[in-house]
Length: 473
Ligand code: FAD
Ligand code: MLT
Ligand code: ZN
Image (tube, rainbow, N blue to C red; front, side):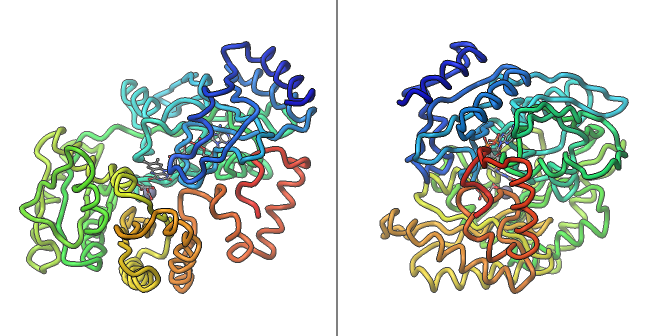
């Protein structure tokens, strides 16, 4: 460690106190990404400020010393967005200690939460106050408000409530020069020049540090109905989605597709996972209906639509949840998909989106192209079919070495992306760019769009100290 490193560490320790700074082996969990793709991460320290003012002071000190900063929330990024590189020059700044709910108002239907509040905690606090914070995803027990906003996370309820961006009214942030910006306005209408709040959402920590957010709340559902269905094929999934949408669009809270490939990795690898259907099928969907209207008749709606679809041969079998415990068990099968894949070995994720109508074709074409590219590999498509976002993932062939398989990651993602491009889709639907997809940006977002992004980055963070190596090539 050189003199500059020692001096910045002394300064940061003075700002956050000795318990706010971690070094040595204590840093390990902060240096490795959730997918274990990058184990070479190093850092000068992990700094955990306890307030926006402390965070601002840390940023000012790092800028003065030219030290790069990696913002980190729950470190559940699927694209290694929150982990530092191997240089050891950066500090990781964690929001772990900034975890207060500052305010909740069930007339305005808003909640002000600090960046380090765990998503599940935000949901629970809202529910206790009699309201719903609807963002929901498999990592909700670890992901933070700052993290979901910085990635503009989508998840299971986008089809009804939108992405994280649509759930945000205002932000407080520390800008890259250390200035505190208080934009925690809780307004439904606020057209006052460029929308800085929307620039920071989805910026993956490259344009500043979100420290708190004003979030939208919704009425709690009075009725819920959930079913797991076995389907004839991918087209049947879309047709079933349409049937529900045509009957009552406002009732569909989530509509999730799971292929045999992905579901069976869960059933075969996750302890306690059981299928509530008579036999395994080639395709599944989870239908989740919810309404805040009294006597919404969701159970009847579910039964009627499924009966129609069974008559047409689209739905082969269905399990309707009879209790909260059964609803949770069906949801668990879906939420364990990333874990099922992790337990089954290496996998390459292509988090893509296409217009909803093109999903079945895209799944079939991509699966075929992937099987041709890596014989023996197992396409495991699943995801948020109701909003056109499919995780077109590929599990390693059982007889192939994991490292050799992962060495083909870019070929694999390119193969899917080329199909997706034909449908006017996106190579990055909800997880973001992080460290993994920076080299795709030139091809997909080059020209005016990338030039504007680079100009914004240079204007706000001229020294390039905020999350270097992420998002931009
Ligand atoms: P981190 O991983 O810590 O950080 C993510 C990015 O945001 C990084 O670039 C980081 O530098 C930046 N960042 C973090 N906090 C701040 C801050 N306060 N200010 C500025 N920048 C910050 N995503 C979906 O969209 N939909 C899903 O359905 C979904 N399911 C998932 C399921 C599992 C099991 C897992 C592990 C992940 C899943 N994800 C999903 C990935 C998703 O991006 C994250 O779960 C979540 O959005 C990240 O929150 P986090 O607090 O862990 O952020
Ligand atoms: C999910 O929806 O479960 C994750 O975003 C997908 C993944 O693990 O690829
Ligand atoms: Zn997802």
